[in-house]
Image 1 (cartoon, rainbow, N blue to C red):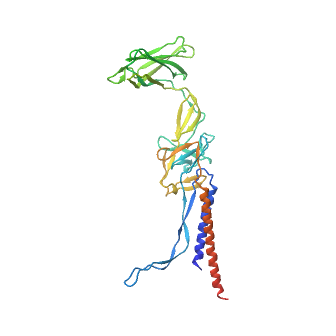
Image 2 (tube, rainbow, N blue to C red):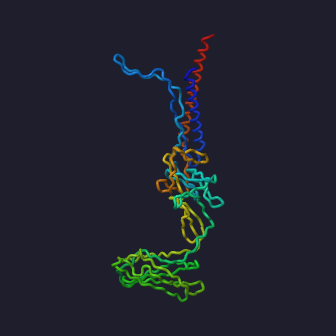
Length: 399
């Protein structure tokens, strides 16, 4: 039997596999996070007719003579190049700009994906379209599920300290005064707006005057501050004062607080001070969002923004070595390397909230490859038909 017939058969099989991969690529041209495949070939074994010989005294060297026996598959690669982002504007749609993969789990099995269309289930757990749970990276370096409790309540905390950041000038002409409002929270969780006057007549001693205007009459509380140029500190740093607040019935109630002046300087001619009381009212979760560094922030009705968790990403030494598991998922293999877990921004890429990564399939390239595969398949069929005609001629030698 002619060797060319078997070479043609091997070529037909290979081009059929190439067409299968191209067809799968085209079918997934609209699949978010899809990474296209590519087929490469290599020649198979060669039959040696005669070996090589070296040069001798009276004769030069001779090259080997071999007949190839067809082709075989060299590889079916995953082309994991970055694709373009499609803007969706949806808060739970996330794209990855970089090499990382989202981590989703089912029980003890972790899967990896580039498709970032996520959802909340009935328990508030962040999941993908198939219900696999998206993983976050906690402070201990472990993976765990992401749960957003839409009914969560942030408890109230009373004000215990007021920090002052900025500068009091040490040189002024005449009286200098600044008036502003600050918010403090009492032990019942109620918010109070106080008027705070910062004043000085010489730049050496500064007076802070706290006053709740809802009291009738108001009960002002004052404290004098003096800067020590030797120690570079204010003499009342860390001092305790008791503010007088309206208890809701028009009566006065006490709120002891401490002054933190560590970030307050003295010098120049500019009065610029920002007062930052701690404490908070009770608040309920109104919304949440995911930032470019993976931070999941809860926005509460009292104005507080609290980080709920931090989305985890995985990175591999050889991402082309991952094994496709269907449903836009990949599994780690011995050749992909161990998954390195981390958070966005640490060499894992960053997130693009409100975007989804499109498929990296290029239709023009795929149709061109389809034409090449089709012609290659046809050419190999001609090898078989031509070999068949030669065999027919041999048969016809005997009539």
